[in-house]
Image 1 (cartoon, rainbow, N blue to C red):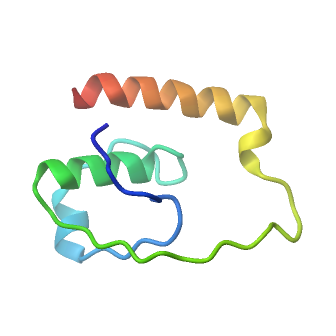
Image 2 (image 1 turned 45 degrees about the vertical axis):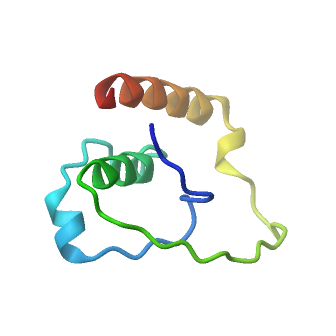
Length: 86
């Protein structure tokens, strides 16, 4: 999708004008929300800064990506988004 960021699924801060100027079709709870927003913002030539964060091991709970239904839905969303953004 043309995203050359190291990590885009952690913490993001956006200027209101960027967020309001990019039409995102993915649900905000979808795994495709941030990739779509970032990809469309990059096409509009908005600039990004990355600040590296230190990761810690999970202390509890279960990763939601381990659910087959969630993984299949994410894969479907990625393929659909890839064709739309081409």
